[in-house]
Length: 96
Image 1 (cartoon, rainbow, N blue to C red):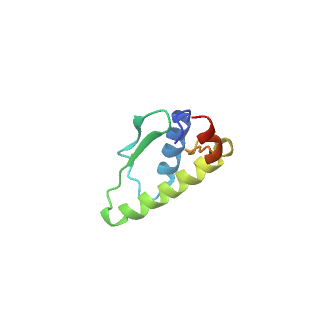
Image 2: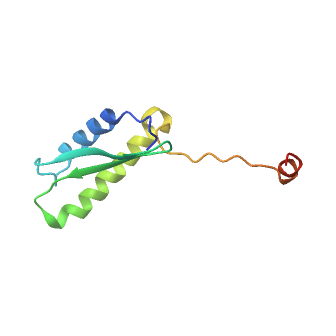
Image 3: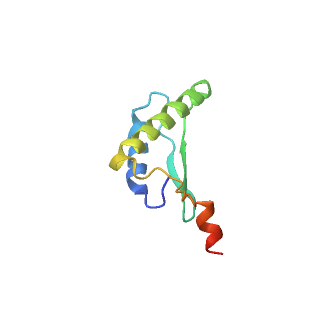
């Protein structure tokens, strides 16, 4: 996500959606900010289940929901973006 992302809002949404998921056992629901630099912040979510056969499905469901939430949150402004500037080769050679 973008480094300006309001992590508490993301955490609150993760907790809400996990609590509503039928496979979540309530033992663990954690959102961690594990890395940040000038372009992005890396978040990790951990949600527990006692049903190992449902684990992958629950992860996919929650990941999909959180992506949708980020796309809608403040118009998607917290999704990371690469910014490129095109330089005309003629302009760059004349300034050298």
